[in-house]
Image (tube, rainbow over all chains, first blue to last red; front, top):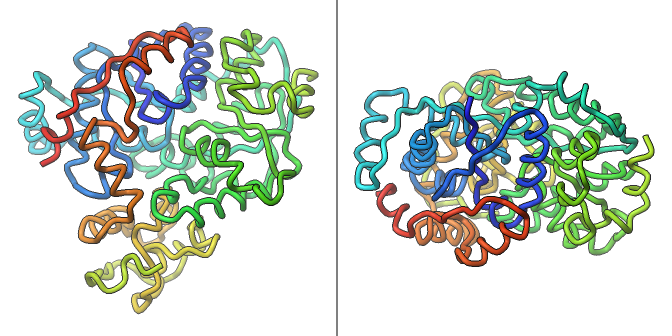
Length: 288
Length: 132
C-alpha cells in the first residue's frame, strides 16, 4: 500500500503540527506519507453549498492521487474525508465519471475513483493493537474528545465505526493510559462551520462544550475545524470566564507522546500548544 | 435568523413523518439556532435558515424515515442568497483553489521550518475550469 497525504486548506496553512505529528506517529507504524501536490479545496461544505459541481473539485484531488500511483489518501479533517469519499463513490457512476474526465482533460488528468480515502482516526484505529504495544510512556490526563463528525457520517458511505456514537477515537486515547471524560458532547459537532453563517451561534456551540468539560485537563481533536473553533477561537468563547480555558491537542500529538516521540517533533511547545509549558494540567500528563 | 425566510418555497419531503428526531440531535438547535430541521419538524416554520447547519450529518443519520436531509439542504442553499462568510470563502476558492489564500513563498518557509516536504499550490484558475 502506498499512502498519499491530503492536508486540506486549514491544516496545510494553519496547523503544521497536526501534519507533523500525524507523520511522526504513522512512521512508527511503517507508513510514509507523500503529500499530494497542487491539491485544491475538498469542497466541504463551502463549494457544495453553491454548486453540485463540487464533486469535480473533489474528483480533481482524487485524480492527483491516482497520478501519483498511490492507493490510499490519508485525510486529517472530517469534511475532507467526507467529500473525497462521497466523490469517489459518485465516480462509480459511468456518466459522472465521464463528465469528471471531460473537465479534467484540459488539466492533463484522469480519474477512475479507485483511491481509498482514510481519515487518520480510521487508519490508526485499524492498527490499534500495534499502537498499544508501542506505548512506552503511559499518560495520565483527563481528556475531552470531540469526534470528527463527517469522518463517520453518513454511515452507509463511510462504512466505519458506529456513525452516531463512534468509539475508535475514544479507544485510541485510552490506549495511551489517558482517561476519556464522559461529558455528553463527544458526538456533538464543534460548530466551526456555523461560524461562516452566524458567529454568535458558533461561539455558543463552543461555549456549551467548554462548560461541559470543566473537569477535563485538555481537549482532544482530530479535525482542523474542531481545533479552529475550540482552540483558536477559545479566547472569544471564554472572554468573560477565563477559567474555562483549556489546552487542546490533536490525536497524533497525544499518541506520539505516549509512543515516546520527541516533543519537538510533535509540535508540543508553548508557542504551538498554548499551555504546554505553563499549564499544570499538561505538566502532570506524563506522570502516568 | 431570517436568512431563508421568504425567498423561495422549500418543498417538504414526503417521506418525512415530522417525528422531530432530527431536531433533538441537532447541535445548532441545542444553542437556539434553527436550521433545516426546524422546517422538517414543522413545515409552517419560517424562523429557520438552511445556512444555519454545521454539516455534521447527525440529523440524517438519526432520521427513522431515511430522508436525505443533507442533500435537501444543499439544494436549498444553492437557490438562496448566501451569508457573507460563505460567499467570501467560496470566492476564495474560485480565486485560488483554496478556502484560505497563502503565498507560495510563505508556505515554503513555514513547511521548511517544520521539516515538512515542500508543497506546490494549485493553479489559480483551477476552480473556474472545474466548476461551471
